[in-house]
Length: 341
Image (cartoon, rainbow, N blue to C red):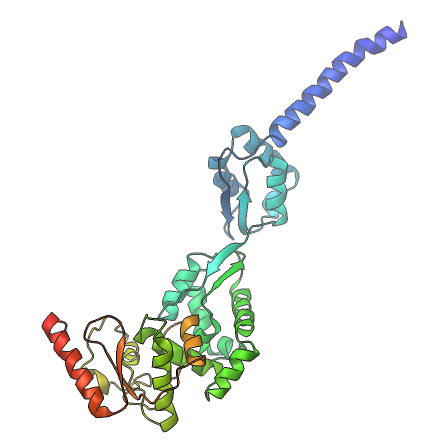
């Protein structure tokens, strides 16, 4: 009789337990994502629990979101929101999604440092990929104290940025970003590169400065060592660099297609027609190709160069000024024929 009563109560209890397990599985352990591919949720400093729910809603079912809300209330997620970029992988369950967000288990991004001409352009490009806003980046790279703490000044701070692609967290702070760039800079400037810079009579910052000019002179990587050799020849004899791109930088007019004598008189330390030696710092984020062109510059006797009249993007080189004038005359005629002013 007692056995029959035990069985009588056991069946409903079993069914009830199975129902609880089934409901729990339905809300917490079925697939959270309804997307076919991995989606990403970006949580920033302004987010609340409700705004996180809103960001998750397009990616999931109502039942999975209900499960997430339940876990959120139980574990007081609203008081422990952690910023970051979180991957929502197809097939992942609600509990794992909640655990990732609550514990800050975010996915890194691949951040490419671009070869921009100004720090404002750099800040805008980086901010488009990071949680940091562009104003914060600009403030850091124009703050003398911040730059000096990293071993630079506001003219040379662009040297810290080596244009490459780095794995980094989306919510990295400006301090961590600059520290990371400093470490990557030191890794790039290995002993071999430092010795080559020394042999050329240049510091790493000076190499970047010269490389930035060469990058603006030609996009032809094969020709860059030739251009580098010409400028190094000028530096060694104390001859002004007379580089047109530095005039454009001084005027902040990068669209100039022709440089006239009136442009050469601008009183600016970046005007290498008026001031001998290298300018105070790079005129853009120097490319790796440009840097290596300086470190492995061609050995020759050329002191002059002029863009070729065929507009191929390459140059005619000359040892003497008379030969250079003939090259320049052909180029000016080509400009006039095309109506380029």
